[in-house]
Amino acid sequence: MSGLDDLTHDIKLVRISPVDGSPLLFTAGQYAQVGFDGVPARSYSMANRHGDDSLEFHIRKVPGGVTSQHVHEALKAGDKLTLEFPLGSSYLRQHHSGPILCIAGGSGLAPIKSIVETALAHGMKQPIHVYFGARGARDLYLVEHFETLADRHNNLSFTAVLSDTQVAPHRHGFVTDAVAEDLADFDGWKAYVAGPPPMVDAAMAMAFARGLRPEDMHADVFFTPEGQEG
Ligand SMILES: Cc1cc2nc3c(=O)[nH]c(=O)nc-3n(C[C@H](O)[C@H](O)[C@H](O)COP(=O)(O)OP(=O)(O)OC[C@H]3O[C@@H](n4cnc5c(N)ncnc54)[C@H](O)[C@@H]3O)c2cc1C
Image 1 (spheres, rainbow, N blue to C red):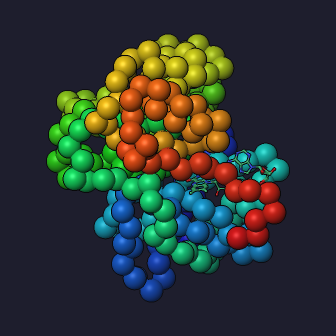
Image 2 (cartoon, helix red, strand yellow):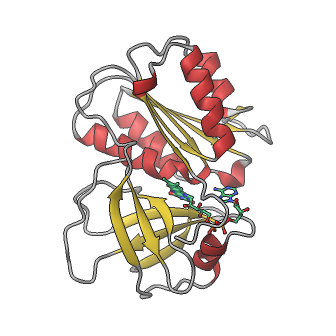
């Protein structure tokens, strides 16, 4: 593992470089099963683009969570990890030419970052709307990064939505309500959604009610069922 940084009070950026220099092949939106010493392996989504020489993960500390707590309290640069990847089917469909809706909750921004950066790098020109839901201002991260991308790319919009507090210039309320206020019809769109179970459920219900076709929903629920030992 090559580096560890704070993104927020409870989300760490973990960078992993392969010791043998093997190629890091994956499609934006996929995840890896990451094995740490002494705790169960868990799934974490790649936040960077395919082709970089390391993998970037955003790992939120889940209260009482065995592995995420280990990452936050014991993991050190230089520790050896195991990786099984690429996994998952919620990856960017590069041949889709219709509009794209991305909804992230908390560390769900990781796969959305990879998807958006890859879509822009591939010259995808359709509208891409990114909504990032968090509780309060201290839970936001990479806002400047996405705002800079949106300044550079006319087809990209980025909206941060805070559920617990009203902090200008961000929107206030549930992220899925903000999407529903802004956008009425998702027929012909693709949606990429990542985050905690209640947010993913709400996002799916909202998008299907506005005409998104089931095959155009690509969602990852950030949850490991009780008792899964990796
Ligand atoms: C496809 C996929 C991709 C994922 N990508 C990421 C990612 O990029 N970043 C990231 O931070 N996490 C991600 N996760 C979640 C991650 O795999 C773990 O579930 C999470 O880190 C908790 O593991 P833990 O061992 O700390 O908690 P555990 O010890 O497994 O759980 C402790 C308690 O918390 C509950 N719990 C488990 N997960 C959550 C949760 N997410 N929110 C609230 N309560 C929970 C459990 O039911 C249990 O009661 C992803 C999950 C999946 C399935």
